[in-house]
Image (tube, rainbow, N blue to C red):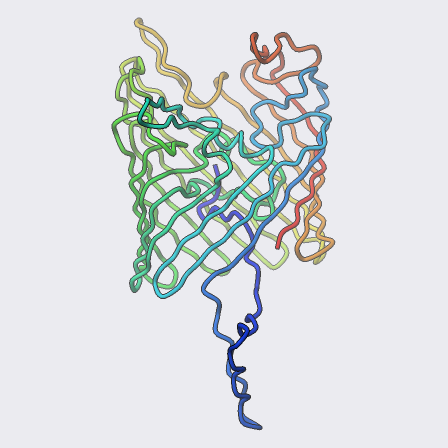
Length: 394
């Protein structure tokens, strides 16, 4: 899960195209007259590439750094993601499409429901959608902007693109909470600083819905040069059809604040909590993360993050609810990142991270299972990694 504005790529500043063949060149301005400003193009193009090498100090025989989001391979050079992004905003018409390929997309769609097909209708699943990060179209009328399609989740401050986050890896909150939603949303600008957004979507991480209910979201945002804040509610039935927990209504509240204390020092505080009353009782969770980043020089940043996520699965005499997020009652991590910017469109990051959990959910040493016919068996309650990653964008 992801920032409130979850950006997928950096926009390319394009120059005005030359006239097409056969068209007359425009007349030059009169001598001494100010040059007319170039009209902004109604579209932008951008893209990014992310790659990393990671060493897991537990040296798991299966090469997997478990429950880690997108940096989940030990002792391997990994092309994490390559994305192409296009946006347009022309006479009130808006849209965006981001294509992706690499290691990340399969994890991005790890929770996508499988919808069976028939002789007259196609099936739907992760393999069908994983090359599409987001795609939506809409319009703008005055202070109101509305769109429909597939878009990044507004939950949390972290982003899909590494360049827009302070660390290389994402927090446990980002990985546990949804990455994307499919539906419709509308944003109204209350003022230059305040905006409110409402959305109706299929649910958590579902291009195609796996139940008959829809989920709703409401978000209030405040944005200033030195401070940005978000308060969000998300509610809906997220269990699949036929789940033993029944048609349980899940409630989530998320809030985060970003404060640029000075040109060289910034902080983020993120909190998230929720509950799900179901047939077996009430499942609930609480989670939080704190971030700090210092700009040592114009090209060197250091960042630190600590996060924790606790979950309770409902239980009664008739059974125990399936966990919402983790196979252990809690998980936490501490991360330190050195970010070098050798170019204005490149970032090289060295990161050290420690993960700890309330039960065995990581891998180390000789791991039982083959990951196919026999699932891998977690055998560690903690893991430590050192990651060297690089990203560039246009």
